[in-house]
Length: 182
Image (cartoon, rainbow, N blue to C red):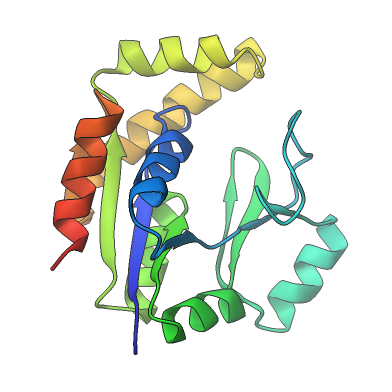
């Protein structure tokens, strides 16, 4: 049985993790592929659960050997999707979710044309800025860079199959569940 591949993208701070967690708690078939990154873990993040934290050298070695479905530079760090993990989960019939940036999502579409690309948008840029500041994990310069990147990502959202506004988590999850039920 083949599963369904879903790309979930959106600006930093939009609530991708929160929405995904709420969605997965309602549907046991929904699983997220753990991405690899060169960035340092944030407080509370677990290896293999939140990300695979790799050195730059190890990341490049895996990229050269074709271990990644897609790999991109985001906010000055490298991120990638382990190809074998995607293939394994799809073969198990899972709703396989890639929580990746827009560039990565568009790259996945080239390899998996039937993938469903969902862009999670904030209710407003002001709300997005408040969410980023509330996290209290980023410097002012980092917040400004993330907001600039968010504006660019929002401009590319029309390339996705659906745009879901994360104004209320439960409503956003309901909309994503409708999109993935077919």
